Image 1 (cartoon, rainbow, N blue to C red):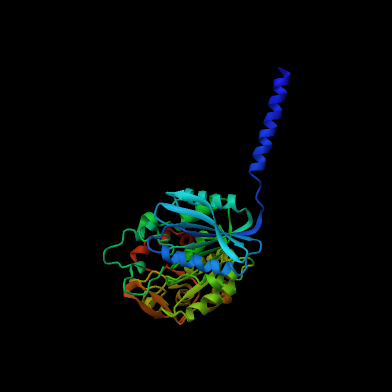
Image 2 (cartoon, helix red, strand yellow):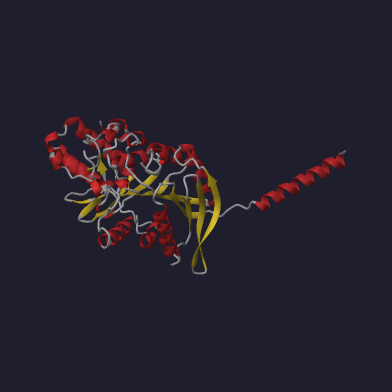
Length: 389
């Protein structure tokens, strides 16, 4: 009997040793960049172009101690997680996992996908690039109940296309609060989250994500369907992140973009948002916006009524106390530093069949406090509004 017990112990140890050898511990790299492209209805060809541009950049040997994983939905029910790998002067794709009906619009689903990323590519820090349509902080429930008369920026036909977070219908869209919970539940705080989407550089979005990312990169207006210029931008996105360089590359590309030379970008330092909210609350406690000034505030979209206004210009029209306004502007410049934002002379909007709008004042970030659009009806429910009123 003792011999049998001894043999059993030896066999158990042997099996455990084999199991450990079959699943070696993966090396931890400095950073994993996760490119997240959930199903977005009509953007798949554009995502594939973005991926090709990333491959061109990686062929230059820019990856040092980083890994780049891509989640790409090829249909509304099918997705693949793969990795870019640099080998012998080429960029190859290594498929890690395939998904059937991934729940990318729920917090649990997002957490599950991020847990896969952590499992396949453990790192000291993580960053995230998101490709989809976008409508800032506006809840899915609001935009999904649009009237027939309300034309969306993704409805453009016969005009230049631009890039709600997700697809063009509610079943493929994700609320920002849901997205934030998905990241938090995965135990992550990103170095940066970059939205390659329209209207995502707004203070309401940044405030919702301030606890799950250090920096937020996005466009305060629509972005052309081409998206970010990854072929040149990846040098600044991977490795040692250069936020000023990201903005410079973006501006250079869109100033020379043949189809429609329009583009805006801003980088928010989320660690500065709490202090910005404190000053904003002081301003709101003392002053109420004069509705007669509404048409004088810099607009940042083509909707009617306007949804997104330039943040700095709005506060300049709200606050007559110059000392308090100076205090606000100083903090705004710490939150979105001058080198962390750029824009062309005009922005383009596909709403109303396409038009260009002059940019006279630019903060790199928007706000919806004075919007009367029905989509903005729930603005008082945002964490930003509650913190500042």
